[in-house]
Every structure is written in C-alpha cells, then in structure tokens.
Image 1 (cartoon, one colour):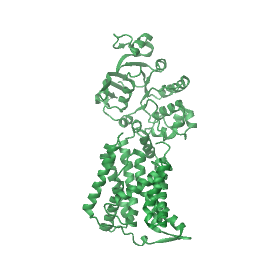
Image 2 (image 1 turned 180 degrees about the vertical axis):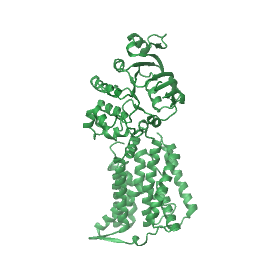
Image 3 (image 1 turned 30 degrees about the horizontal axis):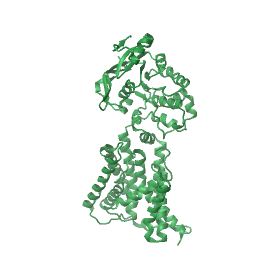
Image 4 (image 1 turned 120 degrees about the horizontal axis):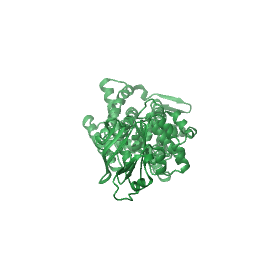
Length: 287
Length: 243
C-alpha cells in the first residue's frame, strides 16, 4: 500500500467535499439557515449541466458556465420568495420547508429524468493524469481540489474585502441594525443563496463528471457537506475546506485498510470531532 | 418648513401601546433633545422615525413627504441616520469596517468620510483595525456616531448616547456635536441626562408614558416645569407649552 498516494487521493477527494459544503457554509454563516435541500440542489445543477451538454452539445465546463447564472437566479428567487419567510427565532420552519423542498426536487427530477443513473461525459480529461514524483494524480481530482481552493479564496476575498462582504457580515451579526445602515437583509440573504448556488454549480460539474448521479443522490451529498462544515467549524470557509480534506482523508485511509470501511471511517472522523471539539476545528470567533 | 414632523404618532408592541399621539417638529439645522424617564417612549419614537417600527405613512413627514410606513433602508436613503441605543456595533467587523458599512445605503458626497470621522474622533484612527468589541464603551460610542455620520445624514438621531458612560467620556463625546452641527445637519438627541440635554439642544421635548408632556426652548424651561413633566409630580399637568 502506498500511503503517500492514499493521502494525496484523500486530500483531492476532500476538495470535492469542500465544494459540496462551501455553499452550505456560506448560507449558514450569513443567515444561520440549514438548507436540507442543499444536496438535491447540487443534483439539480448536475442535471441542468447534463441537459446543456446533451441538448446543446456544450463542453461540460462551458455548460457549467451557462448553468451558473441560472442557478444563481434559482437560489435568489428561492431565498427571496420562500426561505426568507421561514427565518426567525424558531429554527424549525426552515428545516421543515427545506426538507419539503428536497422531496419536491427529488420527485421533480424523477418525473423528468427517471431513476436511471447519469453521468456527464468530460472526454479524455476523465482518464488524464499527471505524475507527481512517487505518485500519480488524476487531472479531474486535481482540478476539483484547486477549484475548491479557488472558491474558498474567492468567497473569503469577497466577504472580507468588499462592501457586499461587509454587508453580509453585518447582516449576519444583527439584521435590524444592518437595516439602519441601509442594508436590506432580505436581499442580502437572497444574494448569499444565489452565490451559494453558483458554488453548487461548480460542485455539480465535478460530481457529474467524476461519478454517477440520479435524482435521489442529493441526501448523501448533503451528509458529506454537513460533515465537512461541522468538522471545520460552523461559518468558517477555510474550516470547511479543512473539514472536507479531513473527511476525504478519513475515507481513503479507511478504504486503504479495508474497502468496506470507507464511508464508515468518514462518519467516525466526524463523530470524533463532534465529541472532542463540538464547535468544530476552526469555529468563527463570533457566533 | 419643518425638516421632520410627527403628527399624532402612535406605536405599539403587540397589545402594548407605547406612543399616544406624539407631535414633534425638527427644523433644518436644529438640535432637539427628547428627555424622559425609562419607559417614557423616547426610544420607540426614535425607532419609529428610523423605520424600525412601521407606522401610518402620514404620521411622520420628512420634507413634507410621508415616511411613516417606510422601512429603515428607505429612511437612510432619504438622509436620516440613527445611532441606536446600546451602540449596536457589528462584532465581526473592525472599527474601520463598522464605519464603512455606514455608507452602504447612502453614498452621497458630503462632509463625512473616513478621514473626517477620524478627524472628529482621532482615537478611532489609531484603532482602525481593532475588532469593535475590543474598544472601551466610549470608543464604541464614537464608532456608532461615526458610522451614522458616514451616510452624510441631514438628520441624525442619537438614542441614549451617554448611557453607561463615565461623565468625562460623555463630555468628550458631546464635544463633537458642535462640529456635527457646523455641517448643517439637524440632530435629535434622546437623553436621560437632563443637564447635558439642555446644554446642547435648541429645543426640548419631555416625554412621559408615551406622551409629550412638555416642550419649549431649552433656555426657557424652568427646573420645576421639567421636574413636573419628567416625573409627573403634578397630576394635572398635561402639556406645558413654553415656547
């Protein structure tokens, strides 16, 4: 067994989990909304990319570029017209509504695409690899990982370096006082969910090109996303990347020891973090 | 023409009515103090004007335009900024970020920008990259005032800015008000410290149990009249008009 290879594959897999989780982390960090339909929205975006690739013959990356603004619009509208109505002191309404949304998306996709597994074809990129000294890495896993890093860097730059980012953080701290600054929390929340859906589209691109997916694939993606967010610390984007990597590492190391342990190892790592660091490894200073 | 006018303004929190037909006017360039004991309705009045509490549209007029039903961001866009009670700084933002977020809803050119706010409160420049939670109470109050000024308001609402601060700090903060007035802004100060309020205000309204019980020019108000309006010592006193 080549442990260096195992670790590299784990880190690269962590990039995919970080992409699953980044949108969830962004939305939770700004409006404390736990979106149970997040995984299904990733699958919805994957089907959207699939449709664009098959119907228009687009390259998957170009299809994702077309899908991103559409998903932004879906996210914006979803938040502004539906989810904003559920936000308040009671955490139950958003959970119930997003759970219902998850069922609606799954059944809608089943109606439209049947229960067959699908895959987005990325051509020769799928099998391309590069030699990194003693180990070899697939081009797609590398692209996934660097996309995850780019997404985290980009979101952090936006949140900490721009006027909109300050408005995000101010609204997250105190929406009533943010209103006194001229910030419209309902629109800020809608913008955040729109951006989360752009990240979801990037995650969907790599989900669709690296694995099979079907209309019921969402909940398992949601679990990985949740675990990455909670391992990293609620509301911390860099923590989310770290959480994804830890989850990916735990799975690949577990699989290297015994292939049956892959999924279990990830969940055990998650439980260990919950047990010893309930707020995650890199929690936000202000919660 | 009054810059701001409330006409029979009422406000409630659920079944509890906090304001009963409040009438006040604020002229251009004027400084008004609103005094009263705890629970008099002063903060509710400020929150109503700032759009935090929704009212009948015509119950608040700004430049003769009904604004009572507008939300807070629309009020800011019209040139009314508020320094809320308890400062309410954003804890995840630094001092400078707190100031910058004050410009979000109204980015008009005017006398107030980062440099002029730092000129008004130099200590904030030294601590510009400090988390706002790490500041003393007085410095936090300076940030709250600076943040409101960043939108270059024509009307500045200040709610209980001396609350919980040492007298020497209160004096320093109030020392900034003449410079704010020089820019032409009108100011409404809600204050429990009567002496401080009388010192800076052109006119005073005293409130008790959601009603205005006294109004007049600061220089004309007698100690007894204020005492009666503030504490309700004279049960027959409804509203003393001394102006």
